[in-house]
Image 1 (cartoon, rainbow, N blue to C red):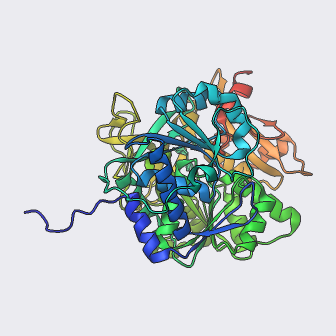
Image 2: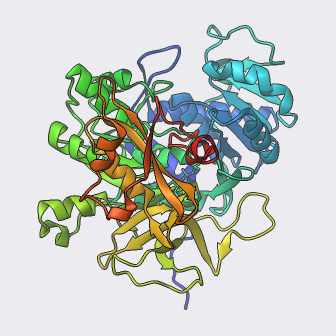
Image 3: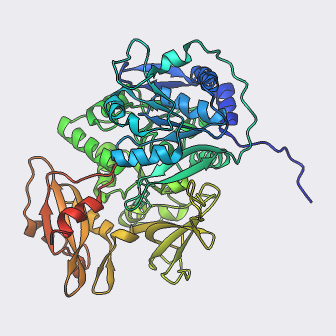
Length: 537
Ligand code: ADP
């Protein structure tokens, strides 16, 4: 017997309607190139979404067409998020830090019809626009007055594009399974792969991500996504903060500038912020050097790469800020787990509690996890067995955009991560499959070694890679970047590992570097380190 409830589509459009009705007056603060403190409301953003949709219809956009953005986190980017998806188009967010060849591949693969770029990215656009034959019109995200001279044919300002348009639009009733947005994962090998989110997956992910044991957003929060809107939808916050009615604080091009971030966090009374560890490392160093404090932040969500122990301890002990460790990937919209305590956590002694907090946390309803060995046999959830982490759920990709084949194995998506899961459901990533170090037939966790290195007071950032070894097949090499004004020699740094990890895990050697290379999404690039150090061995 079928249930007799409404067939109500879960769409970005319906989210927009809800936010307009319930939280239209909530503020969105943005820092843009033109304006250090732009203030607007959700209601005003949605009015401008209608203008944008009218302009795109005038340009001939039809359902399913891809519209690309190369933009920072600000209100205009948010208008593109809601306006394009709600009219039936597909918002394609592009990471401008990718290599030019990757950008060319992505735009051509997606067959984007329109490209909206931030003015700061104009030099990049000037170089590349000829390589984007499918793009019919280029729009610069600024006012008519702020338009720079440019050689890009027909380049028009965003404000000019939308200014004459009506601020009402007859939003279509969309099927919830239609595509709403597209994001390519950088992929360390091969071409980038497109993850095509649906309205349904987006809304279900948004619903879950605001929950108390996930990102926990409520209407009194001021939320700062430092994580870019071009990377995995800023972890969904551009949807989940409005859904809850929270205020959004958007850092524009200043996401990598600790001084600007601290000023914004204090000035705009931010309660929660989200970003990758690299951003917080820079911010912690700035706080230490300047003696400044974060006055209103109560919690941070740290994910995208493993959160170092020293970071969690520093934030808690020196700044009274709780760090929630999160794990996910673009293919998962991106949230897979967040580390929120359980009743049983309260009974742990402080050291064991910290250990548990450092794990990547628990899967919410909507993400099923399992561990398998190399034969595909399921491993126990005992906190000890380590295997390939596989997931499934309504916001997990099943196939890449325009790929012939399914991305699944046996109905599960293989994350490429290696992990353990304990009996309480806390999952701990030990490595990426491709970053594992196999020494004498046994695995060594690079993440654990990096964590120990980064706890050393002189070390700013560290990475461990595998070096080929005649006898052991591979041995770990530590690459460390020191804090300004600090020093430690290789022997002392290696001695620091004694008693903290098994003796045979201790790296054989240390290389010091002025800085570590990062990927376009702000993670340490092991690929580049391997090219530089392992290949030279
Ligand atoms: P890319 O950065 O290549 O575009 P993603 O951002 O989707 O792709 O990266 C997802 C991967 O990042 C995960 O599979 C995992 O390896 C890593 N990752 C994400 N969060 C964490 C975390 N908290 N701890 C360790 N690794 C993480």
